[in-house]
Length: 189
Figure 1 (tube, rainbow, N blue to C red):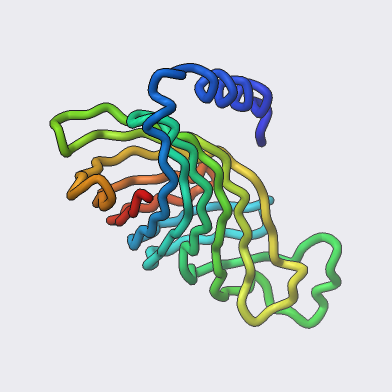
Figure 2: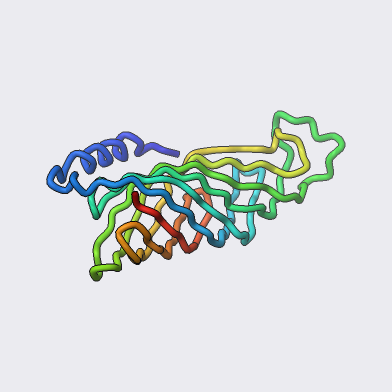
């Protein structure tokens, strides 16, 4: 799934090495985002996850300069409707298939964010990165659980209330079939 991993790492290293003049404005920050997730994903031709659900994300970042940062986050996409067929390595003699259930989706992510100021307090931003996701099916064997890695991308608007507090509206997509919109709050140290 990540055939472009070397090129992503190369771009990340190049972006972190330029702009020495702006290094004096580096800053750590923490953030949280509350939102709504829409999923429609087929996984390994055995399972399908699809639903709308509330979601939340929290994480930390490092602003290398006012226009570039690196973020790590943990996201809970909520409980989703799911159907699954029997995995090939499980004897499903007693199960009536397909099986309908709920699935919990979560992800860890690492992304780079670039922003362009629109006014003194408002900027537009875009992000790209990698998400390591997990799907746990409720009430059935862990043989149905699955995980993977996919690219993520997103965009949004961020309003600076002060040097420390920023409010954002954002959209994020994880390529295996999850779209999230939300409102976020960040605190810069």
